[in-house]
Length: 156
Length: 285
Image 1 (spheres, each protein chain N blue to C red):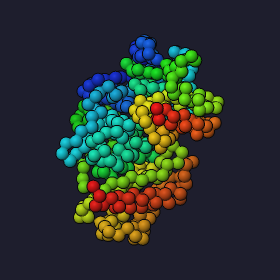
Image 2: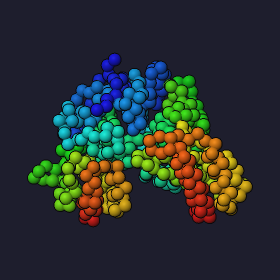
Image 3: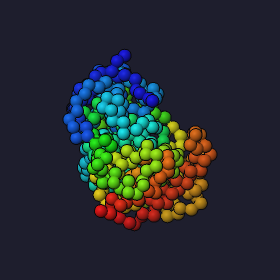
Image 4: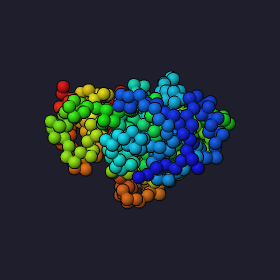
């Protein structure tokens, strides 16, 4: 048995992107393998850890549990779509300033989850930050610095 | 790494087209909404379908409206939408509160209330609350519309009365003069005991007390409901005894998250908490 195939078109990190995908292709595989966006991390594969978080229309989704064809017509942002080495996004600046990362594996997901929070609520309380980020797991358990970094953004 | 097996994906943009597709492929089809349960099951090859009918591009399935004393909640409304919706906040705040704390922000973005009901994962919270709210479900197929109570819809673990060619269109929630609370205990990523209490402001009306996430599907607690009707002002040892009597009759599962004994204890505790919290709201708007 084969999957149906679909022409999809999305805005990916600000650029119009067209592709032909099989129905059963997961968004994470499309992004990592077809688009070479390796900042999208595969870990639990069951929507628990948050490492594969990407933004779809400013909302956070687990790219491991979404079909590539679902992103047809959408605005998709991965960590590669934020700042670069010389021009960091304010969330990246805050994570750097607060040392809000250790091994760094969860960091793309944490930063994108933070972007989504600040889009919907620019001045979250500490409790709101904790609630929103509770679905992103840091195996180094560096939560304190991450929450402080996000709090610093909420105050500006 | 887990991948779903190949399938054919359909993306209707009208309800009529969706209903036709469900009829045409009814021997091996699933409606596809947020995917938060379905795609996980397909990735683990625990569920396989040759056809998925994606409902996400049918706008009318997402609407939330209030008509007199009924809130009509589109099956494709996401948990995040329900959590932020002003109609829900005004008419059934307990549902908004629950939806704001389901799973995590990503699941709330994608997951839908209809998908949650139709997948019938035994540890899902919304079916317990919707049963206590006496919600009515409206399903549709090429054969016509079909109404069923949320309290009867789920008949076992991952088993519902939805026919293979049917789509859940909407959930109709009566807005009644009740104090409503949902209480639960979460372990890891899933609820291990949840209870919903809907206690009418007028003691002449029947309370609805439901427990879930402890067995295969939500269950009502009839002894407890009768006790509250007979003793509306008294939340004492008699209530504790009534709850224990009801929960003592249930088949409770043991799994890696909680033993049956522990779940039984938690079920009694969350049921008492839900009833007490609902009763405490009496007299407040």
